[in-house]
Image 1 (spheres, rainbow, N blue to C red):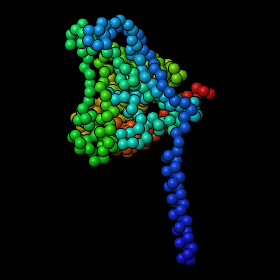
Image 2 (cartoon, rainbow, N blue to C red):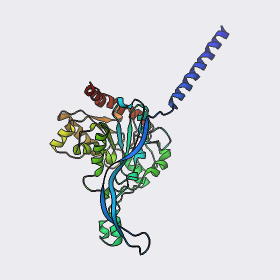
Image 3 (cartoon, rainbow, N blue to C red):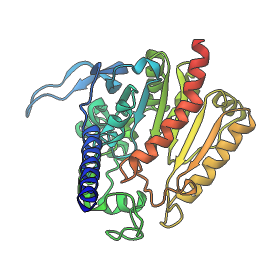
Image 4 (cartoon, one colour):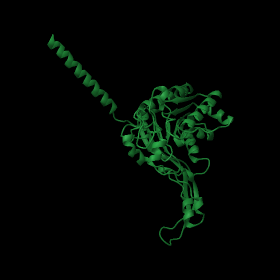
Length: 352
């Protein structure tokens, strides 16, 4: 009997180890793509006087392209069964936001692709690979316009990021349940770049470009975060024809006119907020309240809108950078489930 018991125990250990190895292998499965690439959306020509190259060199007149939006994409096999997802970053950041997390884990870009979604990462107009219009800066340098015309370029410090992103009550002191990998905060700080949105015209060209991208994709889910959190809605107010759902993550919601609410009520809308909103000084409690009002207005107008509070769903400690938090894939699963229920079902109904 002892030999039989020992044999059974040994067999169970082998089975358990085999299952563990299989699970690990699944997590490390190769990422299979049908296609990937990049392109630009929008843009227009502008005639400028370009400074000469070198001391005393004469300036030359010519045209440059401005207000274009860079987009990179990955499409997995079978992606046609789902709506593509466009992800747009926030202030002082680029589309790196959605890629590998600061501590080296899988980001939302890869995870959504592994969930059979085509993902389009956009750099806001004036940021990163989209470039920016330097003409005002050059005109000040040449004396054509006064220094007061220079735009206010935002460059967030580590301390500002720590506070606004809600990593902890004071700099370098995290909340006990903090989900952001604060040990890798230095890697996040490397992602942060100057924000040149002050160089842009009004309305922001990114809104028009996002709407145009949705049309180009023959229907898409638009996702914004922080500074771009309300960009999906602003894009829908420019042209709603290609937008099948809006996902807005942690941002202030502006006051809108009834006719604007009526337009947005035709598009399924999800608003997401993390934790510790009232535990740091700043805008977050007011932002949550303002967005709750917006969601209620959309619902009152007959729209499909949801306010997703992560702590109310049992996910505690999420920061402003919830797509990079330790539980980022759990949050992603909630969003994917919402898309399936509120946007994909509508897509299937139209296909029938």
